[in-house]
Image 1 (spheres, rainbow, N blue to C red):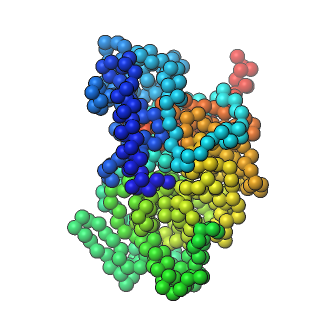
Image 2: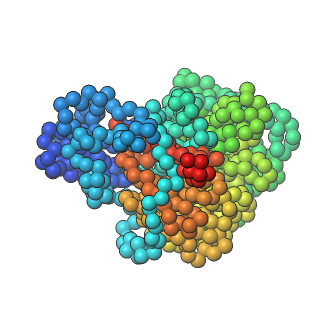
Image 3: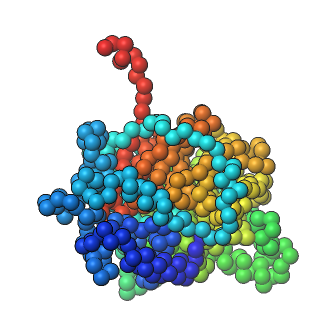
Amino acid sequence: MLQTEEFERVGDARDMEMDEQHEGADAGYAEHRLEYYDTDESLAASDDEDSIMDDDDFGFTWRQPGGSRGGTRPFQDNSDDDSDLLEGPEDVSARQVRRGRDVQGIPWERLHLSREKYRAMRLQQYKNYKNLDVSLDAVDKEVQQVATGSGFYEFAYNTRAVKSTIVHFQLRNLVWATSAHDVYSLHHHVINHFSPLTRKSSQVLDLASPLVARPHTHVHAATGAAGSAAGRVGQGSRVQLEAAGRAIYTGPSPSAASAAASPAGAATHTAPGSGRSSSSSSSSTSEGRGADAGGRAQAQQQQEGIWEAVDRVQVSTMCVRHGLLVAGGFHGEMVCKRLGTGSEAGTGSESEAGVAFTGRISRDESAITNAVEIFRANSGALSVLTSNNDCVVRDFDVATFSILSRHAFPWPVNHTAVSPHSTLVSVVGDDPEALLLDLTSGKVVGRMRGHVDYSFATAWHPGGNLFATGNQDTTCRVWDRRRLDSSLFTLKGRLGAIRSLRFTSDGRFMAMAEPADFVHIFDTSSGFTHAQEIDIFGEIAGVSFSPDTEALFVGVADRTYSSLLEYTRAHSHSYLDACT
């Protein structure tokens, strides 16, 4: 993925190009002209390191004569009364949609452009961001024909109170549903919880202020002794309180303490072909390297996962599962909070809910945390798998937040997904090739070739054999782990890269999200030949099915029409028809 400096350069270049394009826009927009960012790469963001791309930075905005941006109205209105537009769109219900209202509340009947014409213009003008300049002709020949008229999920509600923020334009995993009535999303530095049942939103985690993990009582895996993580780390160390109120543990990290307590330590594996030697954190030397190199490697590992305060974290990715909320930061941060759901959190007590870990898991210059995955190991213990731009995947034990293993690759890792059996991991990153990693041995057991650009999404079917990868070549490929010589299916989007993938828990459907405007829902039982196309306008911050498969949530990031779209699973109740 784009590193910080390149990320900013691309954003600057695209902003200049967009200004030039809109200066010569259609003269039909005389007083105000619609400016809708027409490319994935126009979101590659800002000069200010601390600024965040949110609903005030992109989407439907107004360009006044002379090129200056201003106002909040999305379109030119044909009527004299535009008070409702000045106040902003309201929530939209399924009942209103059945009466003809747009699902996003866009007043097409009052605009110079019809929805159909604007959609055609978007499809023609949108420029998909690519890292590799390669032709997609060969890929297009592999694309499977799909019938898109299905209605697997029905529109239920559009909530304007939930607004999404996107920090990095290539990372879109910022919406998570833990039930049909519990949805988590990011806005600015804050992760919020929203209940579709009560229509109320509440703050869960504010990362704008200094934050440090509180001690959490646990049983040490190696010794069986009870104690707090902070107390265990603090033994023989000190805590410094800085003027800004930041607390930093300067003694041994949890990972170092765990390695010292256990002879095995945390294994470090290297993907073949990366040119890096395998090592163990419990060993002072590495294979093929001298003592000095081994010492540096061990010191680097001990710096990973150090408990320390974090401040003003720009959340690049997040995951909410098993009673845990884990947020990854733009500078290698990781913050974990227990949501206090008792047995789900594995704490047994709601009173223990709170921030369990804060710190930087990587000190690399470009240490963006690209993805986090919460999963339950075969032993029953919870783990967090992180994917970073420093080319390393780390496996954390949630009980102690020590690093169980780290896996180095020859390219930045953009996303990983753990198989339902918790043994295999699909790995994608800044390379057209995708990998299948054995989490136990650390060995690459499969290589998938077919994509022609970088990948940013992967997901497993709950059956444990099929998994999918999403790429900037605008396709999603579905693979069978038992036969990796070629993909089973190649599915294509309408507009741009495939940024997010999700399967329902029953395996019946797969959601495929593009960077903007389109979410595709495929029926896996039909061999991915039938799909539903959700057609909206705006950047997609994330998609998530509820665990019971009854709800689908789509986060839209946009200046005017930022919202949370809720869909419910359609059911055929033929027995009701027989009663009428």
